[in-house]
Amino acid sequence: MRTPRLLAAVVAAVAMAALVPAAHSAAQTTARPKKVVVLGIDGLLFDKIAPADAPHLDALIASGRSSKTWLYANPMAPTMSGPGWATIATGVWPDKHKVTSNNWGTTTNFAQYPDFLTRLENANPALSTYAITDWSPLTTDSAGRAIFAGAIDKRENVDDSIGVPQADAIVAGRAAAYLKDNGPDASFVYFDAVDAAGHSCGAASSCYTTAINETDKNLGKVLDAVKARATYADEDWTFLVTTDHGHTDAGGHGGSTPPERSSFIIQTGPGIPAGTMAVKPKNVDIAATVLNLFGVGAPLDGQVLGTPAADPFESVTLNSRVDESGIPASVLGWTKSVPSGWSIDNSAMGTGGVTEWRGWSLTTDEFWTRTQPDQQRETNVRARGVFAVADSDEWSDKLVNGSFTSSLMSPRYPVTGKTKATITFGSHYLKEGAETATLAVSFDGGAFQTVLTYPGDVLAKVESVRVSVPSGAAGMVVRWRLADGSNNWYWAVDNPGVTLS
Image (cartoon, rainbow, N blue to C red):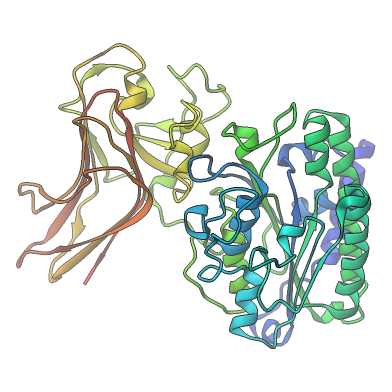
């Protein structure tokens, strides 16, 4: 027998399925106007949705795809609203958009990295765009400070001095009316009550849950208004829901704890499969996804949601902790078993130390950043899913003998008839002492030739290293080597690949 909660979830999912038009053939879809609404719920923890009375959020999750994801922390930026919404709006991380607090002044880089609505207007002024919020820095343009600014067709801000719950209700009413009557091509609608409750009562409180319930009702007004459009059946609507940061149980954010760094993405719409995203997305993906719906490209940090993972490391099976007692046993996040063709050379590796980090390991953000907060592991934001780590600092947290010297070896890449090889990978390196990080290549089993050496820190970067292929060479192996480490930091490598020409 179904419980009332389960029955309500089923009914809500059916209702949401009716809200999202069915997928159509390519010819049909071309003729149907595309519409997208990004719904921002400030300070919402994904894990708090299911226990709440939130049928509309439940239905969005059930009818589309969703995933938790992870944010940065200091020194890149604190887990605050300014950096959070700027990251979502621009599709780039704080080191590019330059919003690193809630009082960012005019030191931003919005001219180079504008919000996704402004990018759409710049690319095609015929598109209609709309943004409504009740936190004024998002839409109130003061000397170029607003995050959503530029040529957006209609921007509104509701004064929250009347009380955030009341302001949210006004946002919902105005947004519902405008979306129903005008059907803008791309919109951003923002609700603030959950964050206000988090600050007032904490994320573990009943008032936080009540704020989720009320926000869900407001969200439902917006969704119902879209469905009530006279032309709704002839339009393709996509909905994206996200947040700028999480909250601690006691209330507050800005730090590096998992709840504070927690965010999520929900996506539903034509052709969007239901389920959990295989590889956790990033908040920068929202802007890339919105722009892609309208055929607009941009040099962003994000990628279109649903892009197949090309990273070889995603194929591995992860384990729970061994020596890392501070990490919950339920968090699966490390392995020494590399994909077929890859290998780890620990022949010069010291002995002892923390099992998880003895030589190169494959790991995830959730597992690795829990080893020790506030040592810039949280800044490895350009890595996705599973990545490789050589961490002499964490290895040395248990008695060791010798130094950390380990090499990560790629499969053999065939290079016959080629003259150039370009090696790409995400890189996040923190250096101290005599430790060295080098990239090297070997052709046909010959000696390794160093093609890149890091003399200092290289944080959250995508590397592209071009190498000449010797005449007559048939195969190339790539080596990432961290040598002579002794309790002095780490190197993280993600999504390695080689292209030949």
